[in-house]
Image 1 (cartoon, one colour):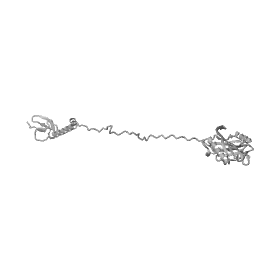
Image 2: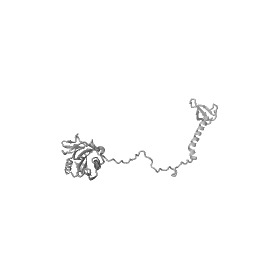
Image 3: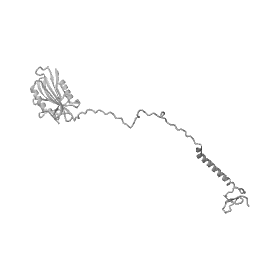
Image 4: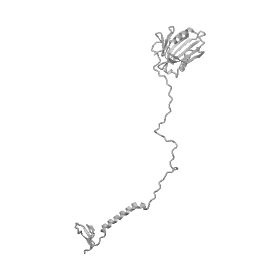
Length: 288
């Protein structure tokens, strides 16, 4: 019998060697027999040993990866926790919110003043036209016995004009119409009448012994708001025949927001002059 060893495959497979164990053909085949000398198989030779060694290493590696944590469990490191004592304190003051716009205080609106459209002047070039005296936004029937005059030196007035009657060589009675300059307008009609009265007492009288306000009240004239002020101005320089004047001031607010004023000066105790003044006052009308 042949000695155990590698021989060409009796089955006819080319370039294949099968192992003979001395009595039977084994199932082991190889293309490169380890040695031509016969000898018992060594588990596939060195190649088999190398493969077995590699497999063993892989098995040990898998055991190290998967079995080691099961055999030797590790205790996880404790994570730091924040206690109420060490946590950051909540702010006691509200943070600034840039999206919030502070509400400014509501300003107190100023007191509206009437809108004035142009100067309160008449459309005439002379004081008296067709028997009517024009001044400011007012006109009245002028007494033909009275002399027309243009009064343009009154500080508060625009387009002032009037008529006058000679009472004594240095004394006259007058009726004056004039518009209030926008710069001279006061907050209300009452103070406007008082300003005009004060100006008249200083402008038209050189020496005044006394002057007293008799009436000062709101009224309506020509369907418009008005203020009527009356006073007596007494003097002693002209003797008993000319004791002074009865003065009447009426300030009217016009539809355009301007103001016009009527001023009358009638000698105290002169009934005729008083009647003529009242007649001109009663025919006053507003002009466009």
